[in-house]
Length: 61
Image (tube, rainbow, N blue to C red):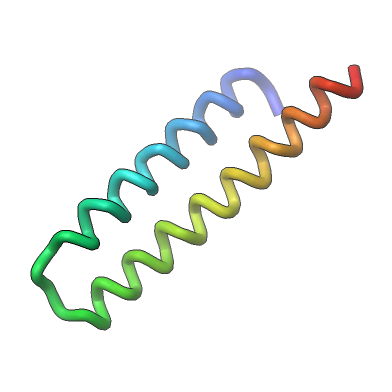
């Protein structure tokens, strides 16, 4: 992973978190809301894994 990739992962994580918080406040169908929240949580989990892996590589170099 390059530094640019890391920056993209961090930005994606931030956007997913922001979207999750915004969706929690919406007055929409609960099933739809739950689905969007699940997608955001999945993106955040995936990006966190990649960010953590990159940090491990940095500390091992």
